[in-house]
Image (cartoon, rainbow, N blue to C red; front, top):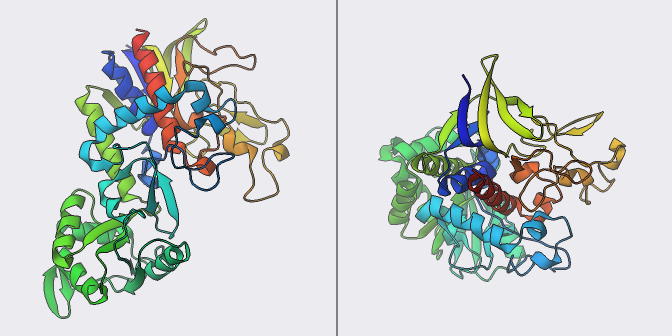
Amino acid sequence: MAIHEDVLVIGGGIAGTTAALAAAETGAQVRLVTHKKSTLRQASGLIDVLGYAPDVDGPVSDPFAAIESLPEGHPYQLLGETAIRGGLTVFDEAVGEAYEGSHTDTNALLTTSGGAIKPTSRYPTSTAAGLVSDDRAMLIVGFRSLTDFDGELVADHLAAAGVPFSVDGVEIEVPGSYRADSRVTRIANALDLNKDLDYEGRALPAREAFAEVIKPHLGDADRVGLPAVLGDDHADEVRADLERHLGAAVFELPMGPPSYPGLRLEDILFDALDEAGVRLSDGNPAVGYEADGDAIDAIIVDQMNKEVPYSAEQVVLATGGLVGKGIDSDREGVREPVFDCHVPHPDDRYDWFVDDAFGEHPFAKFGVQIDEACKPLDGDGVPEFSNLRAAGGVVGGVDRTAEKSKSGVSLATGYVAGTAAGEAI
């Protein structure tokens, strides 16, 4: 017997969770179906609404003021400021005090693990002391066993960018015994559990041992930046203990995968789904659908090689873009694999990219086209299905990476798709 819901959301990233939460707020019965771990574990954990825009020199100060400069067909132009604000409200309510930035429309400028300065709209509390607008002296600490992060290099890049504070960097040995390419999970687990580590021949709790290694390099710094490995389940406690031992503010610099800020955000969002009464089916992919005319009756989920129908009145597609496999491609073309929705793209695959590696590549904007209600459109501009909506990376018409707008587009489209789906019941 098919599982039936009012609203069925496919995909567990920011877009999918936002759509599910927005639909649940309408009173609809919602189920979220996700195949595998979301791409949040590869993400920085920052919520970028719009960092760069055409005809705007340098980072965007106010994302909402810059919307009018975006090209026609951009999701923000199509859905409007209300959609972005609605998505941010859903996010803010879900994350509570774990994130900052909701007090203003203006982007914050945050220090990143590469030493760049990134404009972002919402940021984890664990990164807040790294704001560039803060003029306190800064020390960036790298661990020699983490080859992907160099504290001295980060500090040099920040100084070269002309930040309004003094900044120094140092590479130190991690207390305890770690090989030269230790996985970040080993360090995070040690700090999480606060287990004893060897420090100069004596056993100290991990957090105290880390602080003792850092102290000789502190100098006049009032804040210390560390790679984002400061625990998982007890990250707030880890940071608080380090601050107490050091007598200075401590902040994290987001790193590549596995991203602890991203993993923490994933946990927060799924806790919010549970609190909102959203049902969850994970570990099984959506592989097809059943339809009656222009209405989807059910999606087909592969459960251990058995096809199981999940029926719903409304469906939201939030499976991601090319990276998340929500959009697929081969030598024959580009497609959306679950519902075979139309994905505009040049017939000649050599027109999918340009010769300049850092140029404006057409493939970066591949995705389904949507209308004002987030319904995917066919090649003639007609909704593919009467009860299907799309959100997040599967939506085309925008280069999220270049704009630094990935999270914002996911929030805006997720909010509109989920709200419209719930209200259609």
